Amino acid sequence: MGEISLNTHYLSTNRGIIKILQIIAGFIICSLLCSQWYGGRSCFGEGRLGFSSGLNFVCVIVNIVLFILNFLNIRAWGLERIYTVICTILFLIASILIVWFVIEVNSSRGWLIASAVLIIVQFFLFLWDLKILQGESPN
Image (cartoon, rainbow, N blue to C red; front, side):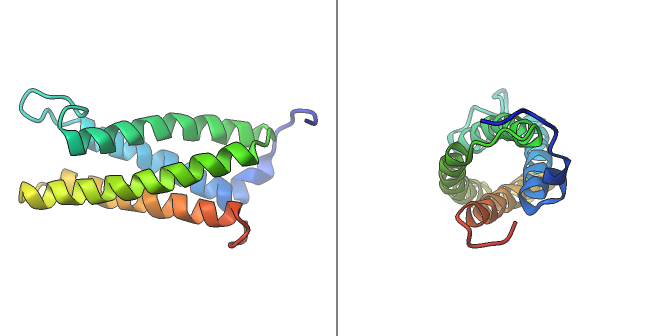
């Protein structure tokens, strides 16, 4: 492990931009899902919404930590690859669950539809990040 220094170039790479977009989308999803009360339950109450909300909450925290580590030029490629594979699969499941919830409750509420769209966007951002980590896409 080399010395710790600021890696300002990281902000202009595809991975840096993806990580920033994941953090921003994550905060928006948190605010959309957790701003509603769901008849006395929190954003972690109903199973499908709780899974999507909880997954997003944990991933926002981990993404912030990974962003700081990469910005400080501390590389953890193996850990990031495993994390990205797991999150890609879990966000695919979360996308299916939240779309199922929207269809089942026949919801025309904009915040719920926006949350579903952003969770699908998160899935594609993690998929793109995975392709970069595997060398299938340029950084």
